[in-house]
Length: 328
Image 1 (cartoon, rainbow, N blue to C red):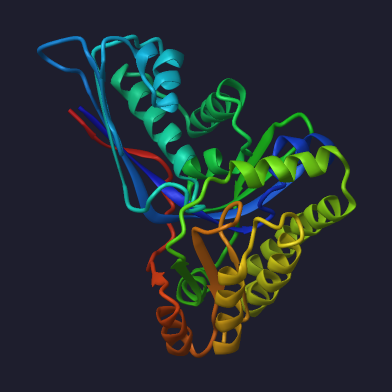
Image 2: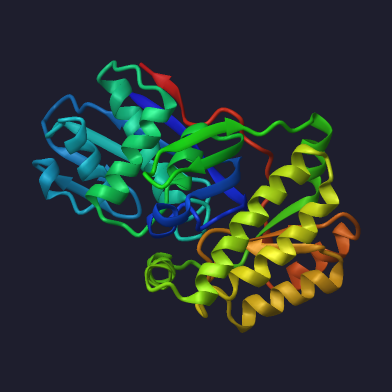
């Protein structure tokens, strides 16, 4: 039996520029942080039969991997040449469709587990590349490369993506004091809205391909904010983080009308009036988690968000990335 643990992530800057439609023309950049909320994958070889069992929000029992409806599980098994005789169980700290990269966490965690089951040592970068190939090339999902690499590496991590899609990975140089300040001041709230990001990402990619001025200019600015965010955090200028998040949100809203709505706008307005310097929806938008930077009046912001029906998710940064917890 193998159990893997893979971290979810929050994006600090540059989100969306990891989409192929953008980076193939301009190069992409993302600065993100792994958090201590996880996807757990348990894989096991059954003793009494050769069936394939996959348990998630549904439960599937089939004779062969090709019969699976769970596309990531099916294609991960195919990539590792496993046809049958396998049990896969997944558990997660947060639900899918909330903007923290759950599908890529599943892909990276499962690939890590299957390689371990076959006693194959697999570097983190290989796991990220394989997850990208699975989700983008094989399943043809409108998704970037940030989520797979963050699921693999965790930490406060910088991703530079060239026009050919090659990803450069490095850990941000952040002091312990700055990390403590960020953990204290970056508040994460669940909007209670689950959404499918495909529509938003497809519209965003279409706008880039059609060279829509508002989309292209907003994407360029999001990348610029990412660089400025990295500079501010590596320099210990944490107040700038809140101000940059505010600018990031204003430009992100211009990309698609589906990114925000009246309820989300109300949340942002109340957070700002209560003391947040800035914030943004994590992931593509439309729901999921709201990230706010609050230096003062933490209790006032918490009270305002609670009145709006939002639930805070306390967290710390994760620095381990995907890992095998159990191998017996």
